[in-house]
Each structure stands twice: as C-alpha cells, then as structure tokens.
Length: 294
View 1 (cartoon, one colour):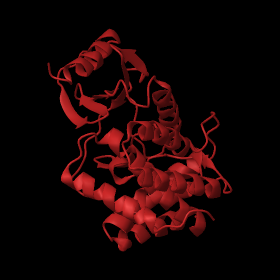
View 2 (cartoon, helix red, strand yellow):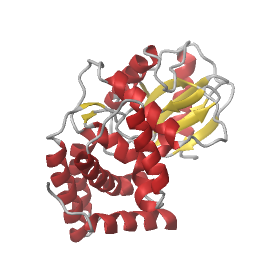
View 3 (spheres, one colour):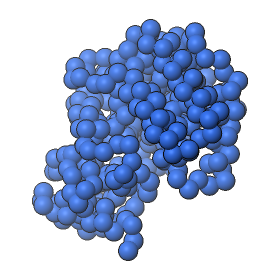
View 4 (cartoon, one colour):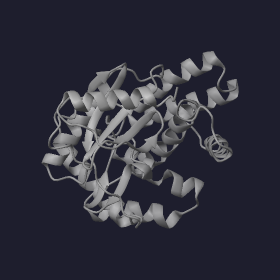
C-alpha cells in the first residue's frame, strides 16, 4: 500500500466531515509533514511520522493561534481558510490542520524583503500574550539527542560535540531578552506569492531572543553557501525596518542552530541523499571550529 494513502485519506475525510468536499489531491510537500492541496483554496498539513519525537496536536494548536493572531494584525503570514476551522484535528492517528492555498511565484524573495517582513512579524509578536514554551527547540533537541544516543545514531564524539554546543549556547542565550519567535525561520518557510512575501509553518513558535530567527534565516547563506551579501542584506533590512540584534546573541544562535539542525537530521532525513550527508558533515565540522560558552 502507498504509505501516503492513509494520511491522505485522513485529511480528505476530515475536510468532508467539516463541510468541504475535496476535488483534487496535489502533493505540495512530502516529508514528516505532508502538505496537500485538496481544492482550489484548501491546503491540509498532516503529520505523517506517528512514532517520531513530536506526537499529539499541541504544536499545531500553538501554530494556529499564533498565525490567527498575526493575520488579524495584518502580518505577512499564510492565511487560515475562511470556510473551514483550521483545527487541529486528529483522524486515523494523524494530526491535521488546514490553511488557505496561496500561489507561489517564480521570483525569489530579496534579502531586503526577508529582513523587513521578519521584523514586521517580530514587532507584532511582542504583544502576543498567550503562553509559549521558552527555548523549546533547543531543549527539545537536547532531549532528542539523548534518545538518538541510545540508538547509536551519532558517534560518541559527535554526540558530545552536539550536547556541548547546545548546552553552552543555550546558557548564553538565556541571558538575553526573549519574545515570541517564528522558531524555524529558514528560507523554505518564507514564500514569495501572488499576494506578497508570506511566512509559513509556525509550529516551532517559542519564546527566545530574536537573534535565533535571524541566525536561522542566514545560516545556510553565511556558512554553507558563502553568500555573505545575502546574509548581510537580511540583517541590514531587519535593522532598517526598526529591529535590533546583539552580535553575541547572533553568534551563539548560529552555533545553536547548527547543533539543532544536526541533531534533527536523522529524524528529518532518515534516508539522506549524498548532498544531505555532505551538509551534515559540513555542519558538524563547522561546529568543531566554534568554541562553546560565553
């Protein structure tokens, strides 16, 4: 049986029960989260990993609440669907939520657009009042690392490196001001669409320093791609729009981001391509050059 058959059925049946009959099934993304276009306007996101570290609907609940708040403030975010409550739902064992479809355009977003819209979201999130976990992805990654160590996923040297960089950077970052963040602000979560540049995938939202999101958006450009002009363009646009960042906090956010991504690689990419394997080795090598602690 096609492994996607059951999660697709879960999304379709949930939509039907709530009054929307799917008339198409386009797979927009196939990973730990399956993204499906079910009609001209309806998109479903389905968590397909039913044995992974994230179970239940708590992550989707936070994502929906933050996205709804930001949309109400005119922030550049993927909109919720007007005719179907976003959820979250759980059917056939799969957590599901729903969104409005937006059409991508081929034009790549500029560094200026990315930095300015990220600041706009940060500015509005300062007044978000619902409780959120502090430093969630970092503390979650430390717990995940313990699980992976028991499985022998990483060598003892690699596990020690990741734990040291996560722990030492977390300790430094806890001394900086915190607020609600996107949590996973990489280039894949910002979309250039026919209605403008929009930020997607808020399930990692947590309380932390703004430098975490900045590090997340510039890490690949600065370290893997050697594209310093894009990295500096994002940072400059963020400041020009009214933002501020601390270089020390940014530095430790860069270290923490690399450690977090490395820790999650076996979960996100259980059968990594040669390119993925190369990127993981480069992240680990880069982390070895970074000193932990203040």
